Image (cartoon, rainbow, N blue to C red; front, side, top):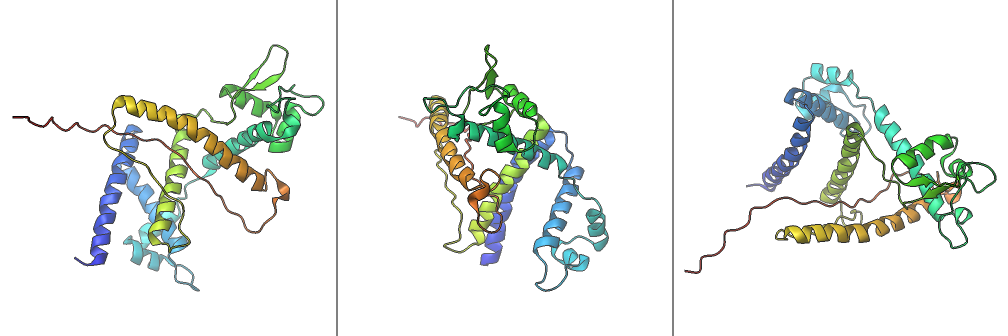
Length: 283
C-alpha cells in the first residue's frame, strides 16, 4: 500500500471517529442527514475558494468543482447561500466584554482593597466604582448590562450596603443550547486547526499539543481526578489570561506590535465508559 493510500485510510478512520461524536450532537438536536450535507458542501466550497486557489490567479468555480467533486451549478448555489455569523460574533463580543471587566477587577490595583483583593464597589460615583471599571475595560457598554450579566452567572453579588462584590476570579457564562453550540464550532475548530498545523507543519513551527490519557481508572479515581483538575487547571488558565491580557491591545492600548492574531489555549476533561475485561480464570 502506498504512503498516500495509507495516509488517506488513516484520515478516513479519524474522520469517522470524529463524525460519530458530531452526528450524536446533530441527531440530538434534530438535524437530518440532508441538512448536514448542505453544511458540508458550504464548508467544502468556502475552504476551496479561500485556501486552495492557484497563486497569482483568481479562484474560479471550475477549479473549485475540480478539487471538491461538486458541479459548478451546485457550487454557485452554495455561494448564494451564505451562513450568517452575526449570532456567533454577538456571543463572542458579550463574552469578551464581561471577561475583560472581571480581569480588571482582579488584576487592576486601582480596584483592589487594602489587602490587595478585589474591592467591593459602588455601582457609580467617584472612581473606583463599578461603572468606572466597566468604562475602563469594556468601553461604552452600559455598566448595567455588564452587572446584570455578572449577577446572573454568579460571578458577582449585591451586598446589603449597596456595594457589588466579586465572587469568582473568572467569568464563566451561563449559556442556552444555541450559545453552547456556537462554542462547539469555535472550540473544536480551534483544536482541529492546531492538529492540522502539526500534521502538515515543519519542526520549529508546530503548535503545543499534549494529552494525558489512561484507560483503566475506577469511577472513584475519575471523580477524584476531575476535582484535582479543577484545583490545578483554573489557576493555570488565570495565569495564561493575565499574561495575554497584558499584551492584548483592547485591554492594554499601549501593548503595541504589528499584525493581529487571535491566540488561545484550552483545557478540557473527557471520559468514556469502557467494558471491564472479564476476570482471568484461575483453573
